[in-house]
Every structure is written in structure tokens, then in C-alpha cells.
Length: 223
Image (tube, rainbow, N blue to C red):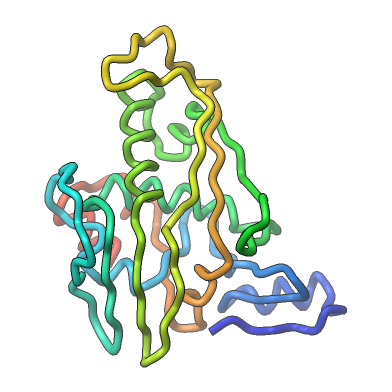
């Protein structure tokens, strides 16, 4: 699914190849590009029950088989995920839309954003409750360990996101004065994610589908 280009491929060649699929040039792996006001998300994740329509809980899951379409199997260890988690995951993926390569295993290649900026990416107003909601969602995404097999090939996926925080959070009862929009989030997406972005294996989901629905309508719109 990942198109390997020569090390001396031009920027134009890379950009043209990325219009349809993930691309590798040398040590750098890039997700496809997508249009403004959309986010590219793998169909394996969209067209499954991974991001469920029901309300999320703190109940831990261990090797739970996720319903999915086609010649694919998907197993989750972590916590149940919902449509808000899909929105946060999409907002993080969108930082790889331009010229930013994915992170090779073991390399410290992080994306740093503020809580205020991520709230803006989610089309919501920043406040203490938003801060906590974003933080909780990122923790769930960081804890989501997936086992994916597509068309008889195993795809290593340690987790959806690696996440670190630099904020004043001290638990669910943290005073609002300790939570600031300028607090930093650092995250990275490993280059194994690119294997889910073959030429016919991803969709450019509109902001409308991502942000203007919830529950089952949100799942159907993203589907």
C-alpha cells in the first residue's frame, strides 16, 4: 500500500504520488494529501465499530474483536472509543497533511500543539471542560493497542497515537486555574499507520461529517 519512490525523487513527484496513497522516499514516510476542509482516515477504522456510536466508558478491554468489513480483522486492547475520539484522532492526523513525515519507530519526532489550538481544530470553544475532554480522549487513543490484519497481511499498530502532556492536570478535581489553553500536547503517529493508506483504502472525510453530528449519525456520515 505504501509507494516507494527513489531517494532522489523530486518534491513534485512526491506530491503527485501523495494525491492517491501513502509514499516513502528514503527514510521518510508520508500520508496522502487531502483537500481543504477534509481529513484522510483509513477505511479500516471508519467502516468498523472501533469508533462506536454509544457513549464511551472507562471499562478496560482486552483483545476484543471489533466488527469490520471486508477481508480484515481488527482487535482492540484499551478502552472503548467514541465519535469524539474519532474527531480528536482526525485533528491529529491532519497535521500530517502537508510535508510532515510520520515518525519511524524509536525516533523522537513529535508534533507539539496547545490545547487551545487543538480545540480550535475541533471547532469548539476552549474552556476547562474542553481541556479535560481533549485530554481524556488523547489518553484513550494513546492506550488503544490494535492488532490489524488486512488481506492476510499483519499490520503492526502499537497504538493509534503516542501522546505526552505538559499541563497542570492533577486529576479530575484539578482547579480550573491550573488548566490553561497554552498548555502543550505532544503527539506522534508512527509510520506503520501509512500501511492503512493504500490507493483505495482511505477516505477524505469532510469537516461537516466529523464535527456537525454525534452518535449514530456521526458514524454514518463518516462511513
